[in-house]
Image 1 (cartoon, rainbow, N blue to C red):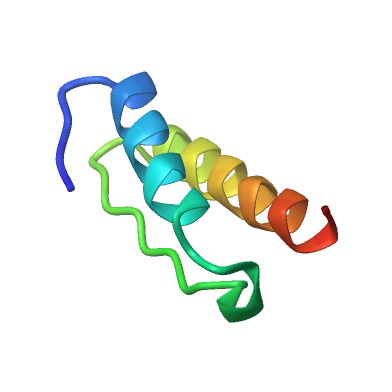
Image 2 (cartoon, rainbow, N blue to C red; image 1 turned 135 degrees about the vertical axis):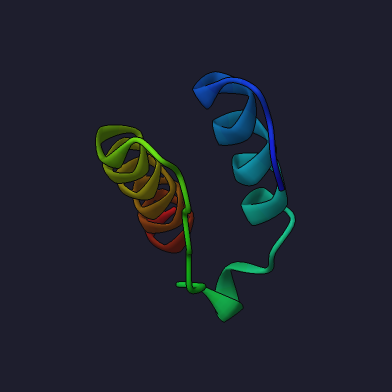
Length: 56
């Protein structure tokens, strides 16, 4: 996936994760971005989404 904003990619990636059956989680996440801070934020956010799905 590619988007022009951090928010757009976060929402798109979350949507993909939420379509997974929680049984297959956690799924591997790979975030590639020129800005290391954005990469860390997105990785953390998507990891948190998965944790929420697993424990729900």
